[in-house]
Image (tube, rainbow, N blue to C red):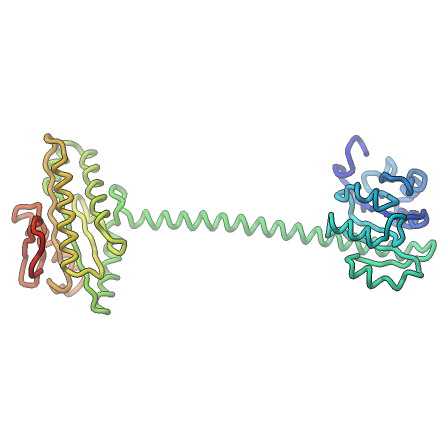
Length: 378
């Protein structure tokens, strides 16, 4: 302890060494390698290397800069807090095991912690075994030989610091990549929202006219290239102006939303249902035969009629008229003419009494009774 703080809480700029040894001689070598003479004396006089508890060495002047813990057995190592250590140096011969046992115990807790095994000259032939077991270095030192251990410690510390720096850089990189991914996700969501907003009518949530025109060009090109059927339905609410004038714009907006919901419910995923403008809607129906387009139109008008029948008696009656154009019937020369043919059928239906389905043929306009069960000759 120093200043009331445990070792793990102190700022230590110098190496923190754990020495696991059986006999005193290596202690002086390791302590001297700290390059703090005052610590050497404290270590030699203040540590019981044969005790069962780790003893920190250092002096008041240098305790925040360097420290060395010395333990004398594997049993003590099992209770030692290795988070406080930068380098471990163990002798090959221990009272209750070997340096290899110490190495295994350290690596089980902190696999990245550099471990040096010090051995007598007669054990030099065990170097390969020790390195294969995971030791960073194997040092053979004769009595009083400080240079080899000092070099090994310096190398181990350099290795440890380099590994810590690499780990720090990897963490920072991982954090940066995670933050970049988060921002990219937010950006993609924002772009998707903007794209959706750019093609959506705000009131009805159907496609807007701009998006309808883009889809019309693509569907027309596909139909012409592959000789595929293509239909267009123009839809208008009969009597909407009177309804809006009498009940107000909020009620009128709600009625438009109800119409949009009904139209969307009767459209396929491949269809493009859009608000064309005001109380007028459009459904672009790729890959659709004229009979199927007409059935859809009749179904929409009939469903809207059921809604009208459920309406309040004081509510102005609002009907629905639909004009249909199909590439196989009216033979339009371009996509704009396909829409114009559907619009012509729509206005012919309104002039003929409203609340009906009208189809544009090459020979002219033909009304389709919504109450009919089938349509011959469409």
